[in-house]
Length: 126
Image (tube, rainbow, N blue to C red; front, side, top):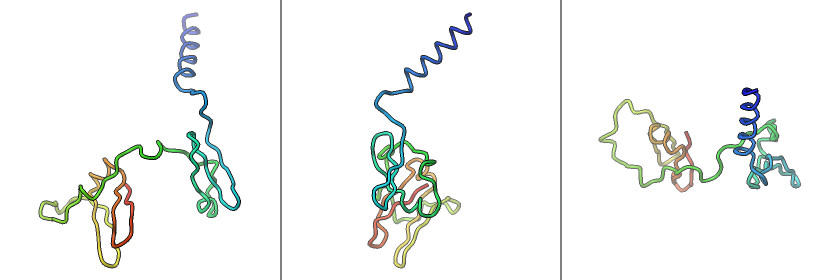
């Protein structure tokens, strides 16, 4: 009897804590020639290109959402290489006139760096 009561208590606890009214599961929406996934907060994400190359939008999984972490910005970057270890792991990106290198250790904490490379805005992710 005790095990049965405990089982039902756990089920009720899970339902109360994790099922929130008003939040629906994400869905796929077609608008004209475009395909969007709509997340649980109602935001539309254009996945037309992914669908065109064979990805199935109804099988996409959703992350933690927009603005959920702080990006690495240019104020954390330096042009000096004097204190950089020769075995530091970096992710590099370059165009015709400029190159940037981002420490994997810093990107692991921030996940993404927003910057300008040449005259283009770019995002470097890890």
